[in-house]
Structures are given as structure tokens and as C-alpha cells.
Image (cartoon, rainbow, N blue to C red; front, side, top):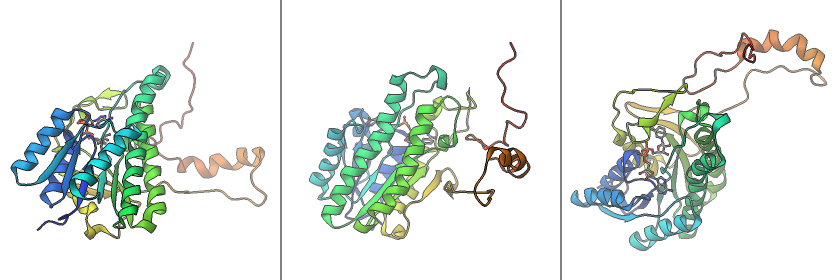
Length: 295
Ligand SMILES: NC(=O)c1ccc[n+]([C@@H]2O[C@H](COP(=O)([O-])OP(=O)(O)OC[C@H]3O[C@@H](n4cnc5c(N)ncnc54)[C@H](O)[C@@H]3O)[C@@H](O)[C@H]2O)c1
């Protein structure tokens, strides 16, 4: 007996890395899984691995960034397994370049897979979950890069968009019994091998990428039927709530703020409150001023 017996699930970008781990855990918990990857041979390897352990899986090579790909993915899950009860939007790519050097093509390639892929697959799955009358679970994938990360305008921006879409869909889809959450995973993968922090390549210790999968399986199950609109750091040793942006310390004045009053009060009240920026959440770095280079 697994916590996902009788459920149909689809995982995008699951031929390797973190998505593969999600599939293994979903299948172990009894779900029948569509293993998607644009590289079909990799997806098939994961299917074979699941089948060898007695689980049920089929491979799918849709490009999830397209509407046709998203429809084919959800359609295959419904045809093969009688419905879709869980979708994990995991597929991802990177094209790192500092902001002033980034081309339209580099920006677009990443937005297409992350933002459009997540939007289109989630919408196709949600149509079906609504029409089935069963509801379901959608799990999106963000990254701490969305706090800001040097060289990742396209990726950080896409992950921020996915976080905001997650909150919005949780509000909109609850009426159909569809829960929407996201994970900010961690794991040593092909993608993490390119990771830079503060613009520098970092040699991170090995973290088993399959360690995110148990939490994803839990989130997809009825044990988490009261969890929606949340983002969790997952992987390694952790399950941690990612706090949502919210209005913080403020200054209030009858009639609002003019420039003269801002000059008088802003530094005194707000300077010590400025937020750290960037993935590492280092202390606020610009107290000495942001100046052009000396000529
Ligand atoms: N590895 C980490 O530490 C880490 C950290 C934060 C977030 N993430 C996120 O986790 C997810 C998985 O990343 P990973 O590290 O396993 O990367 P990975 O490169 O190992 O796997 C990503 C997979 O997505 C597939 N893919 C890419 N474009 C596709 C498309 N259009 N359609 C279908 N499949 C496509 C690739 O072929 C690849 O197999 C990504 O969304 C990534 O942004 C990873």
C-alpha cells in the first residue's frame, strides 16, 4: 500500500536529476507516472528503473514549453492511467549571462521552459483535474535564485514568476479541489554543476538529488490535503517553509510623503531596515553608496 495508490502523475524534465527522484518516489508510493523529458532516451531509462521495481510508468518526450507538448503530456497520462491527479513542473534549463550581456535569445530560452512550460502544463492539468471532478495536486519548482543571483536575470526572473503563479493558482483552483504548491529543491545535478554564487563557480558538496522526492510524494497525497499556496525548501536534510514576500517596516504620515519629508525621515527610520539582497542573504551591501567607477 502506498499513499498514492490509484493516482496518475506526470513529472516534467524527469529523465535525470531531481525530476528522476520525484518519479521514483511517486511510483514507490503507488502512483502511475508519466516520465517526461525532451530527451526520450533518458526518460525511458527512468521508466525502466521504475518497471524493474514493479512500478508503473510510461515515457513522454514533449517539449513542455509548447501548448501542444503540454496537451500531449496530460493526454498521455489520462489515456494511460485513466486520469491525472498530480503534476510536477520540474523541467528546467539555464543560460547564465550578466544582465548587460544577456541576449533576447538567452532570456527567451529560459522563460519559455520555466514560465511558459509551468503555465501551460499546469493549465492543461488543471482543466483535466476540474473536469474529472477529482481535484489534484500541482507542484511547481522555484529556486533561491529568485531572491536575486548575479548572472541569472532570465532564471531568477522565471523562478520569481513561478512563485507568484503558485500563490495565484492556489487561490483560483481551490474551488476545484486542486492544491498548488512549489518546492525550492537542492541536489547535485547537471544543472547544479553550472551553479554560480555572486558570479563565481562554486564547488558544492554532493547532495543526492532524489532526496526531494519523498516530500513531493507527500505533497501530492491526501496527507497534505490542507496544504496549498506554499513554497518549501526541500532536499538534503531539510523541509523548510520559504517565507512569502510581505510588506514590512513602514513609515506613515497623514496626507502622505513629499520629497522634503522623505529627505528628513527616510534615512533615520529606514536605513537600518533595508533588506539583504541575493541568494546568500548577505547583509545589505550598499550603505556606502552606489557610485560609477572612478574615471
Ligand atoms: N539542482 C539544484 O540544486 C536546483 C536548485 C534549485 C532549483 N532547481 C530546479 O529543479 C529543477 C530540476 O533541475 P535539475 O537540477 O534536476 O536539472 P537537470 O538539468 O539535471 O534536469 C532538467 C531536465 O529538464 C529537461 N528539460 C529541459 N527543457 C525541457 C523541455 N522543454 N521539455 C521537457 N524537458 C525539458 C532536461 O532535458 C533535463 O533532463 C529545475 O526546475 C531547476 O531549476 C534545481
